[in-house]
Image 1 (spheres, rainbow, N blue to C red):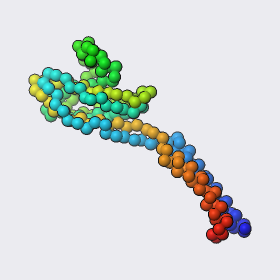
Image 2: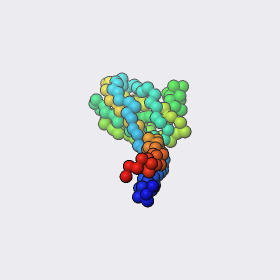
Image 3: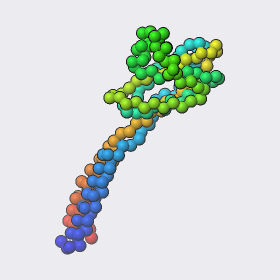
Image 4: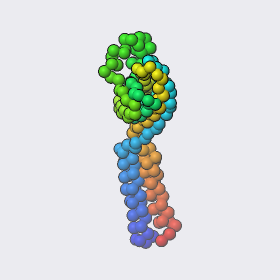
Length: 176
């Protein structure tokens, strides 16, 4: 085996080891941003009444972007977590004074809320129509979260493993 073959094989092994290690470490620590639309719906909120959405699941440590438009006029909105929703079910009149200063009101709005929870999190959206006519609301909720790049980690490991295989193939098959 010549020095040239030995050098080329060594360089290939070293280059693939370094590239694979860099990819593995970079993928382990760098988080990838993911997002999904979890609700895209239209519904009617009756005059002088409330409308509550179905439960919407959020991954732990995520951000929700609530976007809604109202057919005419404005509407009041509040995201209810599980504890607030239970209070709403038990005694809505007890909860309403707490919501008085927390209502988000508008006709074409974007509202962002970040969730820091230990596990997946459920929210229901309550809409309140104070006017004497029904209102059509279109709502879209997009959830954004970060997760580890497992595909990059696997790719890094594969490159590290393939380095010696390719280096030894160059040496033994005398490809040079």
